[in-house]
Image 1 (cartoon, rainbow, N blue to C red):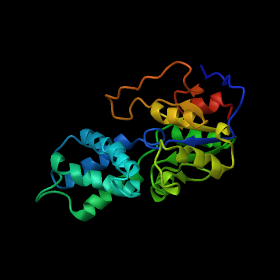
Image 2: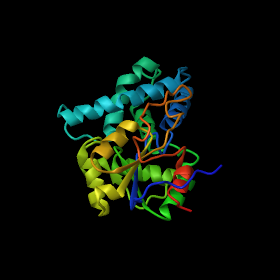
Image 3: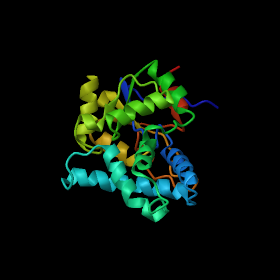
Image 4: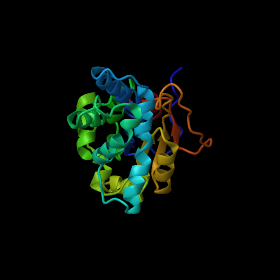
Length: 247
Protein backbone atom coordinates (compact mmCIF):
# COMPACT_ATOMS: atom_id res chain seq x y z
CA UNK A 1 0.00 0.00 0.00
CA UNK A 2 1.56 3.37 -0.97
CA UNK A 3 2.38 5.88 1.78
CA UNK A 4 -0.32 8.43 2.49
CA UNK A 5 0.38 12.06 1.64
CA UNK A 6 1.81 14.07 4.52
CA UNK A 7 -0.72 15.67 6.88
CA UNK A 8 1.60 18.70 7.16
CA UNK A 9 -0.11 22.02 6.55
CA UNK A 10 3.09 23.70 5.40
CA UNK A 11 5.41 22.25 2.78
CA UNK A 12 9.15 22.95 2.80
CA UNK A 13 10.72 24.94 0.00
CA UNK A 14 14.00 23.01 0.17
CA UNK A 15 15.30 19.71 1.53
CA UNK A 16 18.75 19.24 3.07
CA UNK A 17 20.08 15.71 3.46
CA UNK A 18 22.54 14.16 5.82
CA UNK A 19 24.78 11.99 3.63
CA UNK A 20 26.81 9.33 5.50
CA UNK A 21 24.31 6.62 6.36
CA UNK A 22 21.27 8.53 5.12
CA UNK A 23 22.10 8.78 1.40
CA UNK A 24 25.10 6.45 1.03
CA UNK A 25 26.04 3.10 2.53
CA UNK A 26 29.33 3.95 4.23
CA UNK A 27 29.53 0.63 6.09
CA UNK A 28 29.18 -1.61 3.06
CA UNK A 29 31.40 0.58 0.90
CA UNK A 30 34.24 0.83 3.40
CA UNK A 31 34.11 -2.87 4.34
CA UNK A 32 34.32 -3.93 0.69
CA UNK A 33 37.20 -1.61 -0.18
CA UNK A 34 39.14 -2.60 2.95
CA UNK A 35 38.61 -6.30 2.18
CA UNK A 36 39.86 -5.83 -1.39
CA UNK A 37 42.93 -3.93 -0.23
CA UNK A 38 43.70 -6.53 2.44
CA UNK A 39 43.28 -9.39 -0.03
CA UNK A 40 46.06 -7.96 -2.18
CA UNK A 41 48.34 -8.27 0.86
CA UNK A 42 46.92 -11.66 1.89
CA UNK A 43 45.76 -10.13 5.17
CA UNK A 44 42.72 -11.65 6.83
CA UNK A 45 40.45 -9.62 9.06
CA UNK A 46 36.96 -8.58 10.05
CA UNK A 47 36.35 -5.78 7.59
CA UNK A 48 32.79 -4.92 8.68
CA UNK A 49 34.28 -4.40 12.18
CA UNK A 50 37.06 -2.32 10.62
CA UNK A 51 34.44 -0.10 8.93
CA UNK A 52 32.64 0.41 12.23
CA UNK A 53 35.91 1.18 14.03
CA UNK A 54 36.80 3.79 11.43
CA UNK A 55 33.38 5.41 11.70
CA UNK A 56 33.53 5.31 15.52
CA UNK A 57 36.42 7.79 15.43
CA UNK A 58 34.38 10.31 13.43
CA UNK A 59 32.47 12.09 16.21
CA UNK A 60 35.44 12.28 18.63
CA UNK A 61 37.64 13.71 15.87
CA UNK A 62 35.08 16.41 15.06
CA UNK A 63 34.78 17.19 18.77
CA UNK A 64 38.51 17.91 18.85
CA UNK A 65 37.93 20.54 16.17
CA UNK A 66 34.85 21.89 17.91
CA UNK A 67 36.68 22.19 21.25
CA UNK A 68 39.71 23.94 19.71
CA UNK A 69 42.07 21.04 20.41
CA UNK A 70 42.56 20.94 16.62
CA UNK A 71 42.30 23.87 14.21
CA UNK A 72 39.67 23.62 11.48
CA UNK A 73 40.41 20.28 9.80
CA UNK A 74 38.25 18.86 7.04
CA UNK A 75 36.85 15.35 7.08
CA UNK A 76 39.36 13.84 4.64
CA UNK A 77 42.17 14.78 7.02
CA UNK A 78 40.25 13.58 10.07
CA UNK A 79 39.46 10.28 8.34
CA UNK A 80 43.15 9.81 7.59
CA UNK A 81 44.10 10.51 11.22
CA UNK A 82 41.60 7.88 12.37
CA UNK A 83 42.79 5.39 9.73
CA UNK A 84 46.41 5.77 10.84
CA UNK A 85 45.34 5.00 14.42
CA UNK A 86 43.41 1.81 13.62
CA UNK A 87 45.46 0.07 10.90
CA UNK A 88 47.69 -1.70 13.41
CA UNK A 89 44.80 -3.20 15.38
CA UNK A 90 43.34 -4.63 12.17
CA UNK A 91 46.54 -6.13 10.76
CA UNK A 92 47.08 -3.47 8.11
CA UNK A 93 50.37 -2.14 9.47
CA UNK A 94 53.85 -3.67 9.76
CA UNK A 95 55.97 -5.25 7.06
CA UNK A 96 53.01 -6.60 5.10
CA UNK A 97 50.81 -3.59 5.75
CA UNK A 98 49.58 -0.78 3.57
CA UNK A 99 51.93 1.71 2.01
CA UNK A 100 51.29 5.44 2.40
CA UNK A 101 49.87 5.53 -1.14
CA UNK A 102 47.53 2.63 -0.35
CA UNK A 103 46.35 4.37 2.80
CA UNK A 104 45.65 7.47 0.72
CA UNK A 105 43.63 5.38 -1.73
CA UNK A 106 41.70 3.64 1.03
CA UNK A 107 41.03 6.97 2.73
CA UNK A 108 39.38 8.19 -0.46
CA UNK A 109 36.99 5.23 -0.33
CA UNK A 110 34.77 7.73 1.48
CA UNK A 111 34.55 9.53 -1.90
CA UNK A 112 33.32 6.34 -3.61
CA UNK A 113 30.53 5.14 -1.31
CA UNK A 114 27.48 3.55 -2.98
CA UNK A 115 24.06 5.20 -2.61
CA UNK A 116 21.27 3.19 -1.01
CA UNK A 117 19.07 1.66 -3.75
CA UNK A 118 16.21 4.12 -3.17
CA UNK A 119 18.45 7.20 -2.94
CA UNK A 120 18.87 8.23 -6.59
CA UNK A 121 15.28 7.56 -7.76
CA UNK A 122 13.86 9.12 -4.59
CA UNK A 123 16.04 12.21 -4.89
CA UNK A 124 15.12 12.56 -8.56
CA UNK A 125 11.43 12.64 -7.63
CA UNK A 126 11.99 15.12 -4.82
CA UNK A 127 14.08 17.35 -7.05
CA UNK A 128 11.14 17.85 -9.40
CA UNK A 129 9.29 19.68 -6.62
CA UNK A 130 11.96 20.95 -4.20
CA UNK A 131 15.48 22.31 -4.14
CA UNK A 132 17.60 19.46 -2.78
CA UNK A 133 21.10 19.61 -1.33
CA UNK A 134 23.35 17.64 0.98
CA UNK A 135 24.04 19.24 4.34
CA UNK A 136 26.95 17.13 5.44
CA UNK A 137 30.08 17.28 7.53
CA UNK A 138 31.90 15.87 4.52
CA UNK A 139 34.23 18.32 2.82
CA UNK A 140 33.20 19.95 -0.46
CA UNK A 141 35.42 17.83 -2.72
CA UNK A 142 34.29 14.62 -1.00
CA UNK A 143 30.61 15.47 -1.50
CA UNK A 144 31.27 16.48 -5.11
CA UNK A 145 33.01 13.18 -5.83
CA UNK A 146 30.26 11.20 -4.08
CA UNK A 147 27.66 12.89 -6.24
CA UNK A 148 29.59 12.18 -9.44
CA UNK A 149 30.36 8.57 -8.42
CA UNK A 150 26.81 7.72 -7.37
CA UNK A 151 24.80 9.89 -9.75
CA UNK A 152 23.27 11.91 -6.92
CA UNK A 153 21.13 14.62 -8.55
CA UNK A 154 21.74 17.51 -6.15
CA UNK A 155 20.81 21.06 -7.12
CA UNK A 156 23.88 22.29 -5.23
CA UNK A 157 26.28 21.11 -2.53
CA UNK A 158 26.36 22.51 0.99
CA UNK A 159 29.25 21.29 3.11
CA UNK A 160 30.10 22.11 6.71
CA UNK A 161 33.44 23.19 5.29
CA UNK A 162 31.71 26.30 3.91
CA UNK A 163 30.94 27.44 7.46
CA UNK A 164 34.03 26.23 9.34
CA UNK A 165 31.66 24.41 11.70
CA UNK A 166 30.49 20.83 11.98
CA UNK A 167 26.95 19.68 12.64
CA UNK A 168 25.32 19.95 15.11
CA UNK A 169 26.62 23.53 15.42
CA UNK A 170 23.81 26.01 14.61
CA UNK A 171 25.98 27.69 11.96
CA UNK A 172 25.53 24.66 9.69
CA UNK A 173 21.73 24.48 9.70
CA UNK A 174 21.18 28.25 9.65
CA UNK A 175 23.99 28.70 7.13
CA UNK A 176 22.34 26.23 4.77
CA UNK A 177 19.04 28.11 4.96
CA UNK A 178 20.86 31.39 4.34
CA UNK A 179 22.70 30.05 1.28
CA UNK A 180 19.45 28.73 -0.16
CA UNK A 181 17.66 32.02 0.60
CA UNK A 182 14.89 30.33 2.57
CA UNK A 183 13.73 30.78 6.13
CA UNK A 184 14.86 28.12 8.59
CA UNK A 185 11.25 26.97 8.86
CA UNK A 186 11.09 26.48 5.09
CA UNK A 187 14.03 24.05 5.09
CA UNK A 188 13.54 20.37 5.92
CA UNK A 189 16.44 18.32 7.27
CA UNK A 190 16.34 14.67 6.20
CA UNK A 191 18.47 12.21 8.15
CA UNK A 192 18.66 8.71 9.58
CA UNK A 193 20.17 10.11 12.80
CA UNK A 194 17.68 11.49 15.33
CA UNK A 195 20.44 13.56 16.97
CA UNK A 196 20.99 15.44 13.70
CA UNK A 197 17.27 16.07 13.35
CA UNK A 198 16.92 17.25 16.93
CA UNK A 199 19.68 19.81 16.40
CA UNK A 200 18.03 20.93 13.14
CA UNK A 201 14.66 21.24 14.86
CA UNK A 202 16.22 23.28 17.68
CA UNK A 203 17.33 25.75 14.99
CA UNK A 204 13.87 26.03 13.49
CA UNK A 205 14.11 23.53 10.61
CA UNK A 206 11.46 21.02 9.65
CA UNK A 207 12.55 17.39 10.02
CA UNK A 208 12.10 14.05 8.27
CA UNK A 209 13.42 10.81 9.73
CA UNK A 210 14.38 8.04 7.30
CA UNK A 211 15.72 5.02 9.24
CA UNK A 212 18.53 2.97 7.72
CA UNK A 213 18.48 -0.42 9.48
CA UNK A 214 21.71 -1.55 7.79
CA UNK A 215 23.74 1.60 8.44
CA UNK A 216 26.22 -0.24 10.70
CA UNK A 217 25.75 -3.62 9.06
CA UNK A 218 23.29 -6.39 9.79
CA UNK A 219 23.51 -5.90 13.56
CA UNK A 220 22.41 -2.24 13.54
CA UNK A 221 20.15 -1.24 16.42
CA UNK A 222 17.94 1.65 15.38
CA UNK A 223 17.98 4.66 17.70
CA UNK A 224 14.83 5.40 19.65
CA UNK A 225 12.70 8.48 19.17
CA UNK A 226 9.40 9.76 20.45
CA UNK A 227 6.19 9.52 18.47
CA UNK A 228 5.49 12.85 16.82
CA UNK A 229 9.04 14.08 17.48
CA UNK A 230 9.72 14.69 13.77
CA UNK A 231 7.50 16.21 11.10
CA UNK A 232 7.72 13.12 8.91
CA UNK A 233 8.89 9.52 9.27
CA UNK A 234 9.41 7.66 5.97
CA UNK A 235 10.75 4.19 5.26
CA UNK A 236 12.95 5.44 2.39
CA UNK A 237 13.32 8.33 -0.07
CA UNK A 238 10.64 7.00 -2.40
CA UNK A 239 8.19 6.95 0.50
CA UNK A 240 9.29 10.45 1.51
CA UNK A 241 8.64 11.68 -2.05
CA UNK A 242 5.14 10.17 -1.92
CA UNK A 243 4.43 11.80 1.44
CA UNK A 244 5.53 15.16 0.07
CA UNK A 245 3.51 14.58 -3.10
CA UNK A 246 6.60 14.73 -5.32
CA UNK A 247 5.71 12.70 -8.41
